[in-house]
Length: 168
Picture 1: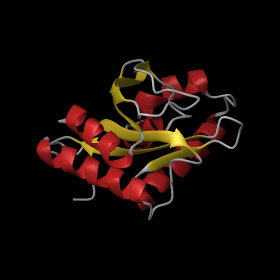
Picture 2: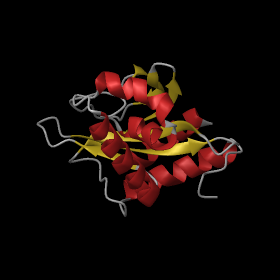
Picture 3: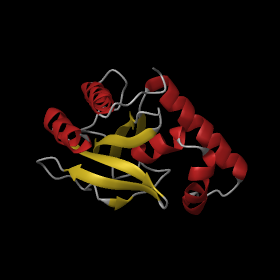
């Protein structure tokens, strides 16, 4: 189901897409579909960063703190608990208000990504589905066609898996 949505999302948006799940070592990208035209960066499968990816932010927002804290502590540059707590609250607020996470780097890479949760039958986040592009190719604003396609894809996958979102 998730693989089908990744392919559909890539075909709909003409941008790279991927599905990620949680592992004991952090978020792991399981399946990807690259866009037709290559950009300066590619989506990789395997372990991905937690705090600096939109998919990682989905898990930060919806997994319990005890689950994510060891991974976040390893990769967080400011290791103060207060900074991590503030970041967790910001990420959770972002997803609660919009339904998706976004990353848009202001450095030379121009990397941008958006991600939304796919829920299981217990109302727990099982996967994160993402679109990846650059600040020039991916519109991360809430009313963009890219965000609309992402949220529709996540909702279809959740429904197909018998999932129930926390908002239901």
